[in-house]
Length: 346
Image (cartoon, rainbow, N blue to C red):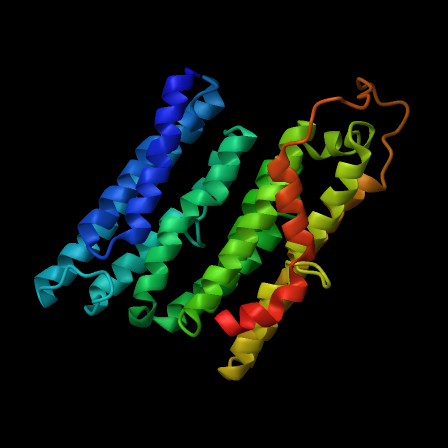
């Protein structure tokens, strides 16, 4: 891809995200989302592979549908209430349409079908952007409109997202699809607490972004796309593979790693709100995700490939590790002691 075109796309991506998260008018938020969509399309299709073209087409169609619904929701609300302010979403039809539009943009169940396919057709770097930065503007709109949204609908979508994200990830052999279903499951955790403590939704998203970024950067460094090649990565950079295992366990939410913090706080808040059944259900469903995280960690650090399999020996590489990988892996493993400060903020 042309470096100038890549720079323009990246800058447009940052501009669109900044416009949406800083706006209080529906039209400016919509413009920011459209800039984001148009900026990421060249990055998805830059490999000129049929799967990449298919992924970019699917992404464009789903995002265009979501943007149309969002614009229609804001116009309906303005028609009935005379307000274009994002926080003044009052009409029930507008609230329902907005929930559907943001769910499509995020990939929440039952609007999740596009997300694994788009990630499978993209490069690791583009997958990182799609799973983290591209979800920030919709999450911000959810945050701003959270008092107006239907809590029963959000709880139902959250539990089904956690269930389907864990269930569909069990039989996946492609690392990008595993992380796509992991993202869907984590969105369930963010959504279930949205009505009761929106700050906790943002904290969960930030910590998820840090941990997922670390995993994508490690997979990009070792050039690992399939579960079968994960077993040979230990010969490249052995210390990095060990950190990869810890990062996966953090994403699974095991103590004393960083990923345990948001799940602990969410379960605590749900219990305070007397939603014990929802807290129990989503906690049990997270065990499905724990299985495929453990399978990835097992393949990366414990399993040796059989000798009769024909594969090229991958010797240790002199390729320097990205400094961002070191930063994100450190944060994704060692942030749990900061939980008192997080509790003070939220």
